[in-house]
Amino acid sequence: MKRFLVSILFLSTGLLIAQNNTSYWQQHVDYKMDVDMNVDNYQYTGTQELVYTNNSPDTLNQVFYHLFNNAFQPGSQMNARLKDIADPDGRMVNNKGTRENPDYESRISKLSPEEIGYLHVISLTQDGQALDYKEVGTILEVKLAKPILPGKKTTFKMEFKAQEPLQIRRSGRDNAEGVALSMSQWYPKIAEYDFEGWHADPYIGREFQGVWGDFDVKISIDKDYTLASTGMLQNADEIGHGYEKEGTKIPKTKGDKHTWHFKAEKVHDFTWAADPEYIHDKLIAEDGTELHFFYKDNKDIIENWKKLQPKTEELLMFYNKHIGPYPWKKYSVVQGGDGGMEYAMLTLITGERNFNSLFGVTAHEFAHAWFQHLLATNESEHEWMDEGFTSYISSIAENQISGSNNENPHTGSYRGYYYLANSGQEQPQTTHADRYAMNALYGTAAYSKGAVFLAQLGYIIGEDNLAKTLNRYYDDWKFKHPTPNDFIRVAEKVSGAQLGWYLNDWTRTVNKVDYGIESVSAEADSTKITLRRKELMPMPIDLMVTYEDGSEELFYIPLEMMRWDKPAENDLKRTMADDWAWGFPTYDLSIPSSKGKVSKVEIDPSERMADVNQEDNVWGGSSEETSENENEQD
Ligand SMILES: [Zn+2]
Image (cartoon, rainbow, N blue to C red; front, side, top):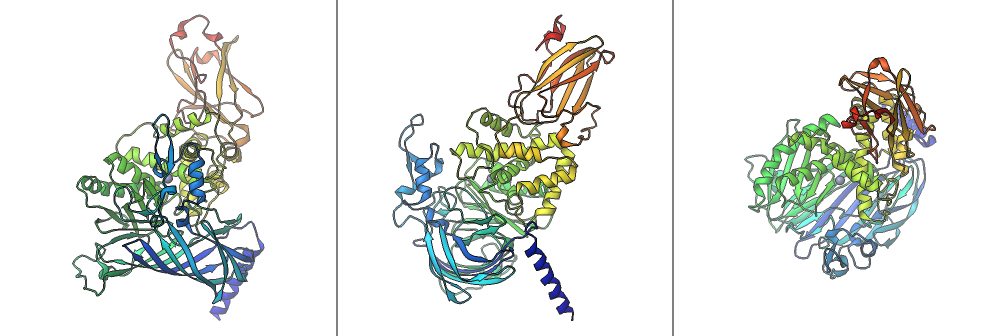
C-alpha cells in the first residue's frame, strides 16, 4: 500500500513537471565504464554502459556524444581555428618568427599518426538494438531506435577505442613537465539536453557542459602507475599507491596491471591522471574532506608542493564559508595538464612554478569546484559566470590567506576590464565562448569583466547582500545548471532590489558606465553639484562630499529603476538624496550652505563602480580649493 502511494506521488510529480515548461528539470546519467590502457602507445579500449533518464518534457529521437580526442588531428576544426585566430594560445603553437613578428605554426598540424588523438565508437546499442550513428569530428550523431519519452530511461551500450594525443591543450600524454597521462575529456560523453535544447558543441577550444550523474569506472593500467581521479577508490587496500589504510599490507597480484575501481556520485565529468613517478600525499581537512596531492618526484618542486597542502585546506575552509560546504569527500590537486584546469573533484595544474604562482593557480582551480563543478553553468554560453565568479572569490581568498590584505583585491580585474571597454573591440559577454574574435577578448570578458560583475554588484546592493546572495545561490542551485537569470533572481530576492537592468546592460551589451561631475557652483544659500551620465549604463551613485573643515558626508543617489535603497555600509553616516531616473542625463544635488563650504566632491570613493573614465569623478580636493573661482569649475 505504501509503495502504491509512493508511485502515485511520483507519477503525479512527473506529470506536473511534464506539463510545466517553465519549471526546472535536468537530465540524469549513470555511467559504467571499463577501460584498458596500454602504456606503450597510450592507446586504450573501453566499454561503456550508460543509463540515460529523460527528465525533460520532450520526446527525444536522437542523442549526441562528445568525442573530444578527435580535436587533436590535423584535419580538425580546432586546428583550423588555431591557424585562423590572430592570437593563438601559446601552448598550442610554435613561434617560428620573432616576438615582434610572430609566425605561428599549429602544433596540431605537426602531429604524426602515432601522436594524434582519436576516440572512435566501435559499436552502440540502445536497449539491445543496434543504432545508426555518424562520427562528425568531435561529435557523434546518433539516431535512436526508439524514442525516449518524458520521464523514461534507456540504456546505451558502447565499445570504443582511443588514442591519447601528445599533449597540445588540457588533456594528453607526456606534458611539458613529463607527466605521463592527463586524462580529461577522454571518454564518449553524452551531450547535455536542457531547456534550450541540445548542446552538442564541437570541441574547438573551450570548456564544459555536462549531464549530472553517477560514474562507476574501472581502469586497468600498468602496476607502476599511480592514478589520481574523480571519485572514491573502491579497492584501495588491493591497489595501495598511498590510498590504502595506514598499515595495510598490499597483497601481491598476478599480471602486469592493476584494475583501479572508482565511483563518483553527483558529478558531470570524470577525469584522471597517471604517472609512474607521482608522489601521493594526503591531508584530512578540518571539515573531514580528504585533500590529495600528486606531483612528480622532482627535487625542485617538492618543497613548494608540501607547503601548498595546508594552504589548500585554508582555501577549502574559506570557500566553505563564503560559498557553501564542499559536498564531496575528496579533492585532489594533481600535477598535469598545461596550466590549470578544473575537473570534477580534482584539478590538473602544472607544478614547476614558484610558490605564489602554485598557490594562486590552486586557489583559482579549487574555486571552480564550486563555480562549475557544483554550480554548473554552461561554460560555452555563460563563460563569465564560471571564470568571473571563480576569479572574484579566489582573488579574495588569495588576498586573505597569503596575508597581502590589499584593500581591493579586484584591482587587476578592473584594470583588465577598463582596457577592454576602452579598446573598441569589446564583444558582449553573451558571445559563445568559441566565437570571440580573439582569445584575449574572450579572456578579459570572461575573467576580468566577469569578476567585476560581482565586485560591482557589491557596490550596487552592498557587500552584506552580495555575501548572502552567494550563499543562497549555492543553496538554491548546487548540483544544477544555473543561468545568469537564476543568479540575478537570487540577488533580487536576497536584497529586494530590481536588478534586471544590471544583468542586461552588463552582460548582453557593451554599454559602459561613465558618470562625471559636471559642475559645482555656489547659489544664494547652497552649493549646487551637477552630475552627468555620459555613457548608456545606469548606476546608483555614492557621492562623497568633503567640507572645508575636513568633515565628510556620503550622499546616496538611488537609481530609480531599482525601486530600492541600498542599506548604509560600514556604519558610515549617509544622507539619502532623491532618485536619479536613467532617462535624465544630468542630476542636481543641492547642499545647504549651513552644512559648510564644499571643498571636494567624489563619485564612488570605493572605486567599485566600473567607471571607464574616472578623470571627471573628483572635483576639488587639491590646491585649487583655495582659489577664488573654485565654484566655477567644470
Ligand atoms: Zn578558470
